[in-house]
Every structure is written in structure tokens, then in C-alpha cells.
Image 1: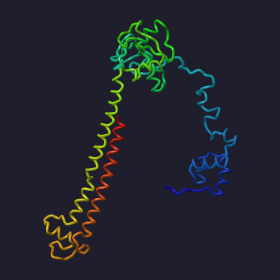
Image 2 (image 1 turned 30 degrees about the horizontal axis):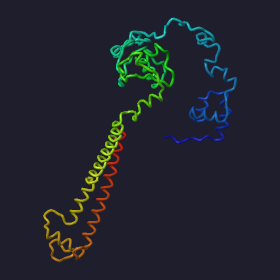
Image 3 (image 1 turned 90 degrees about the vertical axis):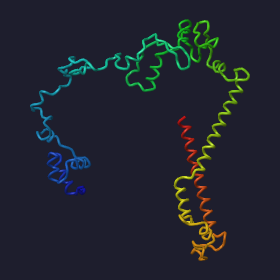
Image 4 (image 1 turned 45 degrees about the horizontal axis):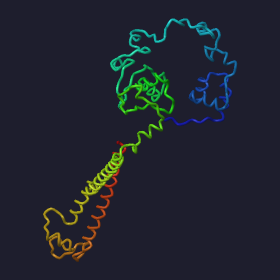
Length: 327
């Protein structure tokens, strides 16, 4: 990387004298700076080209009135010679054959298209009929496009009722008198408010045994789910992680559980004697039956078990939260 070159007072004076009447490239070469640095410094000093330089041939050929290209430039108000010769969507070659035109369907759209008047059954059990082929305008958002496409289909019972009584007032709905959604007769349709529809469909309007049964079923499902979560947490806390298992093996190795060592040697080590039970105490051992080695080992194992239990409880809680978020 080239070191940065700073402008001196002498260079600023030379730039002030040369810049208004000299091409910037020549000024940059003379002062030993790059072209962009020269332009930036001139802008910072407030310098500009004078009128004599702007009218000279060195300024720019497009500013000269007698250059050879002046006769080929567009004049203000001039009409392009190819105006009206090309229609929108024109392209050379076979591009015009493969372009989509407004209202044209190809590929999968042809197979999935349903003509106006087609009827289908909605997921809620209402008979619907296609009433139009409305397309979202250009630049419409995804939500607006989905709403426009959804308006292509309308419930048949609404179409029947509006054909006899006009548009449905805001805040109202059409209900079936006998509760049968497939019985689409004008005599079986009635207009009610949304509030009345909510009160009609509420849980407390069901026969006497059903509301209580539904509430008890919901409480039972909640208790079952809570018990399953608790069992998963307990099962996870009982399984030590791999790191703690390796640590336990290492502790057993260091506390006398070596391969080939008998019970006599382990008991002697616990009493603070040598590996052969010869009465030679350990360097850091205890001579009593309940020595510090055994107490320290128990304390280490208990602390490790507590850490393992807390770790598995946190992992089980994270799994439950992830499962809830996915559901």
C-alpha cells in the first residue's frame, strides 16, 4: 500500500494558479498527485474552471459548437426517428413467441385453471362457487394478491341470499336455520349479526352433559402433557453427560480402581495404606477408616451429579420449548 501523500502550502498555491485554466490531468502530473486527489483538493479549496478554459478545445469536445458530432445530437423537442415503429413487447428472434401476454395461461396454470361457475367444498364444509378471474395488479403486495385471489370464490349460500336480498350488510352473517350446511335453500337461510352468531356457537349452548365433558377433557389433556414433560425431564437428569462419565472413569482410575487391583488393595488405599496393604501410608492419605480421601471423593461425585442434573434439566426444558414453538 502506497504511503499517503499530504498537500503542502506550496502545492496548494500552484493548484490555485493552474487549476482554473489547465486540464486537471496535466495539473495532477505536474504536482505529483493522482487525478482523483487533485479533483478532491480543488473541490476542498473551492476552485473551478474559468470561462476561457470551458470554451477552449481542451475542455471537452461536446462543448464545442463546431465539432463533427454536433449535427448528430438530439435537439430539444426533436421526435425520435423510430417513434411508433416498435410495439410494446417487441423483441427480435423467437422472444416474442415465448413472452407472456395479459390474461394468457401456460404450463401448470392451464391444468389447474377452473372456469367461472365451478363449485368446490371448502375445508369448513361450505359449498363455494367461482365468480370471477380477478388478477392482482402489478406491484401488489403478497397479502393484497392473496386477498384478490381469494375473492374469486364465494360461498354459494351467500350468492343465493344476495341474489334475493342484495349485498350483505357489514357486521352480519348468513346462518342455516336447520344447521345443515348442505341445505342451501332461501327458506333455510337467515341473516343474523356477528354477535348473535357468536352467542349461538358458544359452548354453553350445547346440551347439559357436553360442556362439562369438553372442559374435563381439556383439563385431562393438560395434565397428561404436564406429566409427560416431567417424565422427560427426570429421565434426562438421570443420564450423565459424556463429559461427566469420562470424568467418573478418570476418578475411579485415580482412586484405586485400576485394572488388576484387588479388593484388599482398594481397602488398604482407603485406609491410607500402600497399594499392597503393607502399612506404608500415602503421601496425602489418612490412616483412619473414614479418611479424607473417601470424603473428598464422595463430595466430588455429589457435586458432579448436581451439575449433571441441572444440565439435563436445562436441556429438557429447551427441548420442550422447541417442541411447543414447532407445534
